[in-house]
Length: 220
Image (cartoon, rainbow, N blue to C red; front, side, top):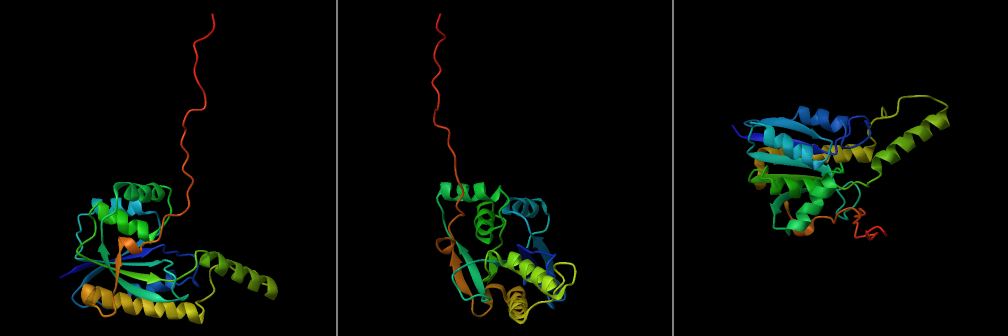
């Protein structure tokens, strides 16, 4: 029986209105996958601990399906299935992604590169990309606070249900995940994804101490 891992990259469990949140997880828990043993991983931390977790596990997966939000310039709410083809990067390009990863930044692209570098991915790796803005969680929280303020109510932030557009994202994601689990690289509509198509690193300031003082022998 094939073993399949579903990884929710950037999963956030506290905002019900967020497409990569509790409702998506609940729907995936009930995913029917005849003939497959499916394990779901909440990958809501940086790539390095995820790689270490895979390395430490005795389980070896036949197929991995990663689900995450990423900006590839598509229409907001678009859900795209991709087949990871990998590719070669220069040593420093990989090292720079590791450098960013250890800061705790959650990045689907960094996870793909670093996971490939350390050899944790099986032959079949399907990526389901959701086009969301970087500040989508913040926008949801602000919207809920505004509603509470306007209605004069006090409620727990994160309890509002999915909006229609967010529900469509969840529906599309679950259906593509179902196909990816069952068919892997054989599922229809897969778009190739290689290292050349990944987003550049975030703008991080690298400081280097050159030499700001000259030591001289004390004057006698």
